[in-house]
Length: 243
View (cartoon, rainbow, N blue to C red):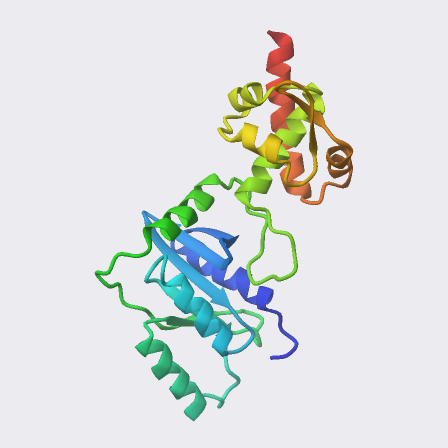
């Protein structure tokens, strides 16, 4: 299994939950994969093999939902011995589901080995709300779960790209104007915080692009997001200029 990466597990699991009608997103609040349908949330953590880190992560995710799955590659034929049975007993006791992906097969089939039961205990409402806000704020589906040391297209970054693309056309604008045009309520916070070094304040309440913003427009680190929001910004600006 050493030739496989954790991200190789993502697409088969994404396709599985999508086929069941779930809306699936990757790398949401540090979760490898989050699937949501009719208010039901499933979290899946992906690992190349069963390990304590996978158990710790799954236990942490239980603060947001009972439906937490540990996803690993399917064991080789004949490898389901005492160690496999010990893992099943442990995960069942911890109420963590197990899914496997046949990465050694061209079909990459998914098997649900065990399913966690839903308890009556209420989850941590703050963490649940943060997870749901992140899910609802994302428009793009460009991130792959199970990746590490890679920048993630979060909802905040996505909104920042939208603001960046609009300012690239308008040249200068106020936070209130940007919020009115884009519907981004925290546009003022994005501009003033300037987390990515893209914006600068040119006068009282007026912002424009900084050198870092112009460089980001040029490099387009998330090309699909930039293409989507550049077109959206052009449409918005076109309505302004025509008025």
